[in-house]
Length: 158
Image (cartoon, rainbow, N blue to C red; front, side):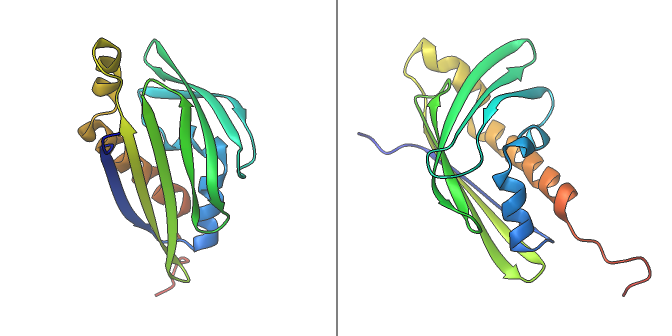
């Protein structure tokens, strides 16, 4: 089997490792991490654990895209992997890793290995999940994560 294309994205958040991990463990954060005009409709979101599932519909405007992911390699503080078992992609494995840089600073590492379906079936996914589109998605996720979690000094603190 040929090697799958990959996409990686890294960023830092001014928040403790435990806060970043907890935010990403909660499937309800998915809609907050998804840029408009995409809308996420969660149908089933089990608590993150080995073998847990998330069933959702991603709405690209009026176009619904069914997606089911199964989690594995779950480590409560350092990350997890989700593998699509139903999606427009032939293969999709997304690894989330969190690393403490300091008590109040965490690095987020995103890595996706993916493959499109061949021929016309893969055209739609190539439009939506191409490298520039993935970069825009994860740039938004960086912004949304920082917005939700960045610690700000108290008023008047140096």
